[in-house]
Amino acid sequence: MNKIRTYNKISVRGLAKFSLDKYEIASEIGNPDAIMLRSHVLQPEDIDPSVKAVGRAGAGVNNIPVEACTERGIVVFNAPGANANAVKELAVAAMLLSTRDIIGAIDFVRREGPGKDTEELHKLVEGGKKTYGGTELKGKTLGVVGLGAIGSLVAETGLMLGMKVLGYDPALSVEAAWRLSRDVERMENMQSLLSKSDIVTLHLPVLEATRNLINKELVESFKKGATLINLSREKVVDTAAVLLGLENGRIGRYITDFPVPELMGHDKVVPIPHLGASTEEAEENCAIMVADQLVDFLENGNIRNAVNFPNLSLDRNGGYRIAFSNRNVPKMLNQVLSVLAEREINVIDMINKSRDNVAYNIIDIESEPTADLIQALEDIDGVIKVRTL
Image 1: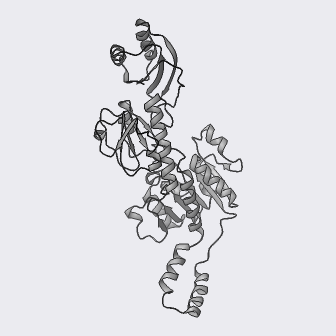
Image 2 (image 1 turned 135 degrees about the horizontal axis):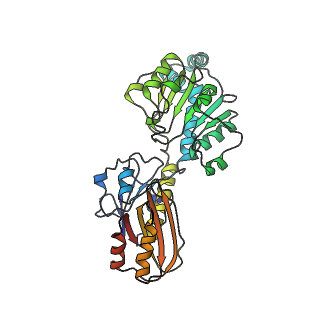
Image 3 (image 1 turned 120 degrees about the vertical axis):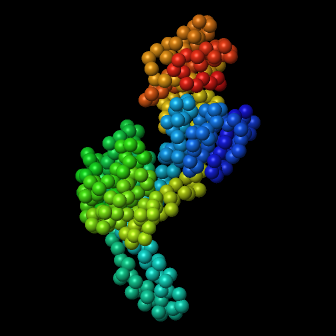
């Protein structure tokens, strides 16, 4: 029986993926095999020695101590793309808010409208129409920074709205490139994209290369009066640099899903309370995706959408399965196979992949692994964690 400890409220449809005859699920449970969470900030000391995997029902994993997990052979899963449509739709709303003062107009009617009769309200509305006019998205240039699952959807939607779309992503994967419309004009650098875009929208993870990506120097490259939209992560933007851009007119409006104290009260800032993936559909999609990945890993050892281990899977073709992680150093697999050979254990099938400083292996063998065999594998210098499945 596998045990799953949950943090936050996880979609019922996601939890239903864990069959009751194989899994126990609770927010307080001893010796869990896996942890499933959303925004809860997980500390290394909160992770029991029994934990084999952590599943984040969302895309970002900045609330998980990934490096500490990797050191302990704990696989960290996320749900890339599962909330993409929700974020895309909020990006469209943000673009509309950037060209039409919808919030100001609504506040005006709510403030001035009560108590007026039909004729007075009609005059008020007609008068307000002049004050709160705007421009259309059609014909504007949209700059999309980050062309992954979300960014590519935003770019496609921009094209459908009649916008010219520019894209920049130095780490664009082959899969993402296939997904991207050829009508999106690829930019070679950020400065070129910023200088040509009326609206810039960010869709990037927080990495060392992207932290404070929008800094004081890049702000000076913005087309004067452009809108900056940040629905990705707070730390990809240097708040002080954005405030400077708002003051000198380089940035006309900043729409962010990550309010911070320095931005409060600024009339050119539209703060949103982290609504990017806050739809019923997105929460369900993320929970279902992560639950499926955890089930496949716990039952078969397969890895899909891990952020710290290589993705790999091996179909079951009979026999008994051993899965193990190790430091990515030479001759590790040879040592494991030697242990099997010494015990005259035949290998049916196997797969091995590495990622950065770690490697992961699945080996199907003919005979049932003994405690002595597992101990011998664990004793190999460089082996991190061994599991039998």
